[in-house]
Image (cartoon, rainbow, N blue to C red; front, top):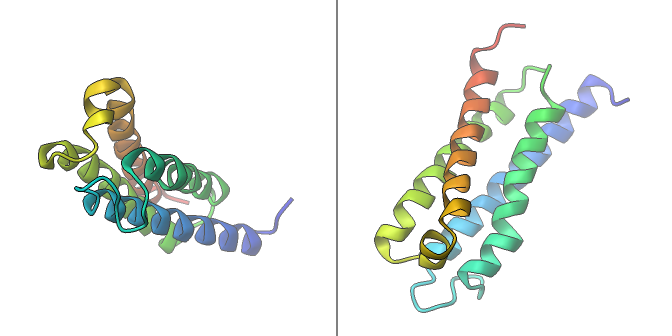
Length: 130
């Protein structure tokens, strides 16, 4: 069993890594109009190697630091949820990531719902009373 200080640190580290990966995924997607983005990954590779791990890390940071009051984790959960929602809603309107939105819309909608869920978990942490 981890002590509260170690849980706090692990939660913060996971949240920071998760938001960095999500930011890289978003930047890569928005710069991939010619097929490959900033990191030389196409949309599918970017989602698999950056997007999915970022969601898992953000959810894990919430779970590990659930009973602790950690401002950084709370802030990054809110920002990560907003970033995921907005990017997944805007990308198809700009002609980006169309394969995901058109060919497999149930996964596309699931990503938007996950973004709102992560945002909600951040708000839960913000307003919960200890």
